[in-house]
Length: 418
Image (cartoon, rainbow, N blue to C red; front, side, top):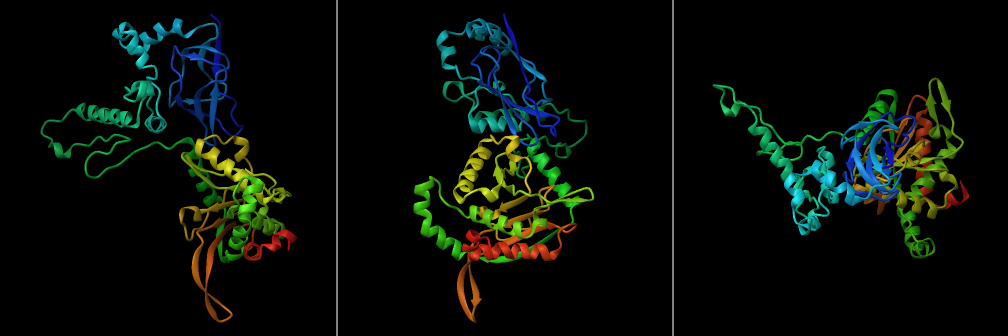
């Protein structure tokens, strides 16, 4: 027997601990080298832990939902073992004794037992449950979302049944026990623990509001020139670059244009110092299943429209899959939040510390506007820029937002940087 230890990967300097999400393998399973064993969630990203060696998973030391630190031992692999040799031990540890004597055909039909479908896996993680604890009714024994809901309901029923009823107390006055994931009665409630990412987002937003002197300035932008340019070049752009041209690349370019004119918008506070950044790393707020994330477009001033669009598509896909790396979300000198994607008409974005300003863009809608004494219909977007009034005066904030407005209403300005 040759034992290989599986440890928690090295975490970022600012991250002290992480949470085990769900083991993808169980004791006795054959493991291929670099096969993903478990995902570990920090307050910034979800890390995948690959197998350091091929062999058989002989021991799981830390279960789903536990808190771990960097380099902590979580499992062991026998690199010289084979699955058939480890199977009896695994069966005796995780199943009744009679399961070991079940026909070979039954074992084959349940080859995927303990494996959760994607929707079921999320529900299991939300309720700190292991897939192996839920009997699967899906294909080959897979655990489905319905299986998890049923298990949660069963647990809730057991909890209610275990309550000792005090003598002389009417049942209607007794506390009601509700499942964390399943509502009971006509007034449903659901209690779900925050993920580390959600808790970190909450902490940073509170920090931003308590440490910054936040003020927001607004302006309206006629998006017709940008829309006409997109329509004119969309087909050729997509054919040439393999990606569609969206509004976000224009917003990024307009923001960089304004930051160059008013560098304090791209600065940050460090104690009693103002740090002026000579580079433009733009954070793009992206919604993900685990919460808000803000990946960074490094040196956005040096990126083309196509490079920006491709990077945004890449980040969106990674955010949806929980695959963004720490290095992709670290830093940033200015952020853009596009609530218009979800239909928002107006909002006051919160600064992403240690940055000093953030741009919020919204849904573009046709509005009745007055031009040269005439009422005309224009596709308008309301822009909101929140800024830290400790270092940014109203003049710079207003003029910076006006510079973005002018750049979008006359996109040629972006080409000539005027």
